[in-house]
Image 1 (tube, rainbow, N blue to C red):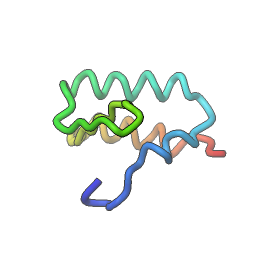
Image 2 (image 1 turned 120 degrees about the horizontal axis):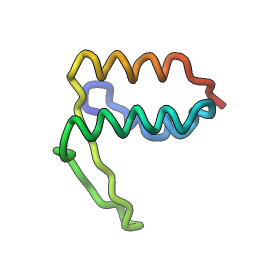
Image 3 (image 1 turned 180 degrees about the horizontal axis):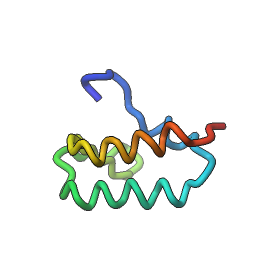
Image 4 (image 1 turned 90 degrees about the horizontal axis):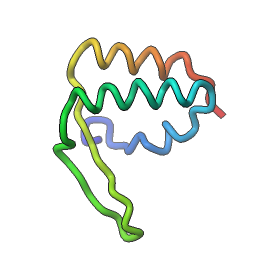
Amino acid sequence: MQTIDHLLSPVLLLQTEKADELQTALTKVIEQAGPAPVTDQDQAGRLHEVWSISDPAAVAELTLWLAAATWS
């Protein structure tokens, strides 16, 4: 977030095609990354977790999913 100065979760919410497959890919990468190093709970009680993904294979996989997605 600091590097790009933006929070990407609203962008991911706009992805409309193959949402289940993207969720599976994200879950796999997150599970491999381990516990989130940064967490926060907002005023509504929602937990937000942030991972920095640096594994080249994981970055490539997620980049391909996001590049091929249909956005609304």
